[in-house]
Length: 95
Image (cartoon, rainbow, N blue to C red; front, side, top):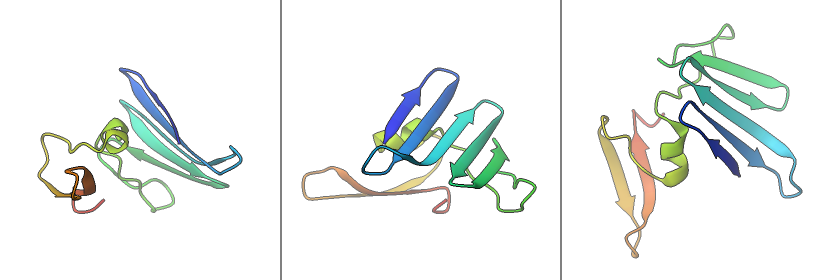
């Protein structure tokens, strides 16, 4: 995984073992996109579906996902392992 975070945007690249990009998530103040191979999904900040009807729910900032943090304004269910580390984080109805 490669994560690029700025004050205005986030980009997460999920990489295959040899470094090829398997998927790309990009989010800025206006919308979010997911590119996976030849599939492209787009949503605005409210998680509204794109023209395909598939929808892309990226309301919380991706840096929360990368760091294993719950978004402060939304209730979350957190399960920790024996070492106190986050093992499971559920938030926003599992989306």
